[in-house]
Image (tube, rainbow, N blue to C red; front, side, top):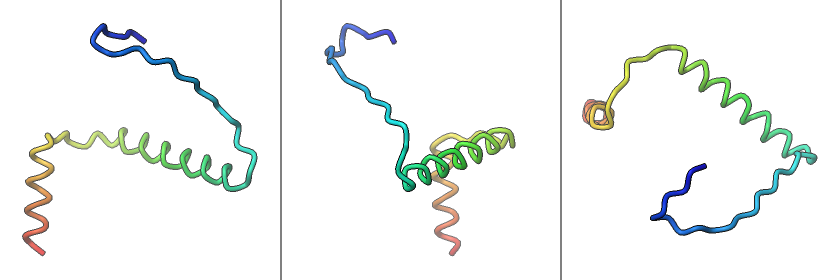
Length: 65
């Protein structure tokens, strides 16, 4: 990763722990399902909208209820 001069340099430690508890495995499985859903969503090729378009659509929806 390239670090720009304007950012302060900080040292970090990263630990990756394999899930061993049943609830950890459930969380991993849930994230894998979410990842798969997002991949499928990307394949739909939905029309792209700007932030302003999304906000305007939400306002219109809210006002129509």
